Image: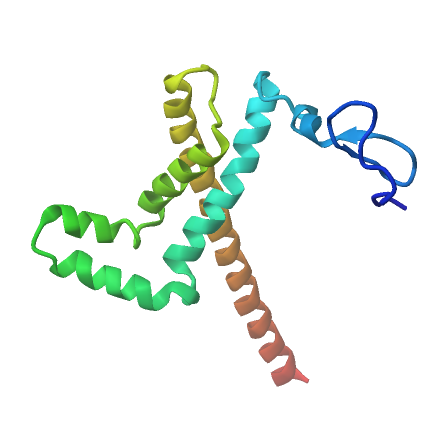
Length: 166
């Protein structure tokens, strides 16, 4: 069974070690190198992984019931504000695609993820690539929900037919 020994969490070096009970040593500082970001495969991996929380946050804020009151208020403000800038600002909280850009910017600030190029252009590429992948996930999720709803309706119809026949 894995776990952390409470005895010694450092070796002779100054770096703290995670010491599972099976005796192996894993240096936490070097754990991100298990999927290096400096290879194309590593960048694709992180692109696919980082898009998941971006899609989840965008979907939750724009569609889920927990944010309904705030979303309704933003919808009202986006329709009634006098200035175009104010209307567009409030609209971003009601549009899944628009909101995913802002969530992506926050994730880029937190993770410093760059795609293909190791300067500011890498951030621009990663911004649009992450938005594309996150919105692809959102579209797949929406399609899955439609398919599940359709399957439930078909199942209810079949159950009614069986009850009527039997």
